[in-house]
Each structure stands twice: as C-alpha cells, then as structure tokens.
Image 1 (cartoon, rainbow, N blue to C red):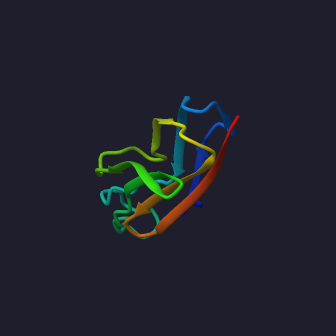
Image 2 (image 1 turned 60 degrees about the vertical axis):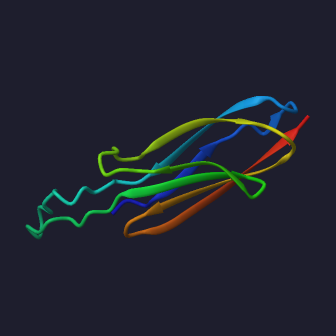
Image 3 (image 1 turned 45 degrees about the vertical axis):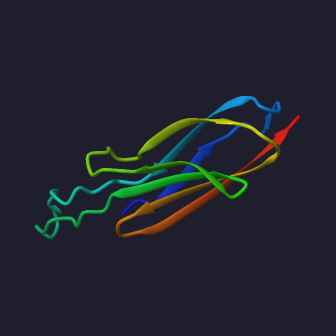
Length: 109
C-alpha cells in the first residue's frame, strides 16, 4: 500500500479578520472493499477516510463525516476568518490506518 500522507496549504501570514482559503489533501487510496487483489484473488479490505476536522488554537471550526463514495486522495477546501495569530490543526481518521494529524501556523501582521 502507498504511504498515507496528509497535506495542507495555509497562508503563513494574514491580516486581522482576513478570510483565508485553506486546502487539505490526504494521500490515501480509499479502498472500497470491492476490488480484487490480482495476486491473491481475494477482496482488498475496505479502508476509507471517514472523518476530518480542523481547529484553530484548539477550537474546532470545521468538521465532516466522509462517506464511502469519496474518491482516492480526498481534497477538502474551506475558509477561515483569522481572529489572531495561532495554530491551525487538522485531523483525519481512517478505518484501518488510524489517525493523521498536521499543524500549520498563521501569523497576524
């Protein structure tokens, strides 16, 4: 299986109260449980990303439960109104591979 890698694009600087666009991507194959492994002839077990959330300075501001129909390498984009300098934290949860976390800093200028 390919390495699962979370990524996020967050501006490093923003004006106080500015609305910034945040882009996230989880490099994940999103196995639906219907594909047959060519080598073994067995079904590849289902393994999807089923949850994503984003927090700013510890306060959750974006959350989504993901359904099995989402494609591989799920991309999520949303906006944040920057109230102060701080840390944007991202959390992805998958069925079989566990939890993935990532943090990015935004500085108010």
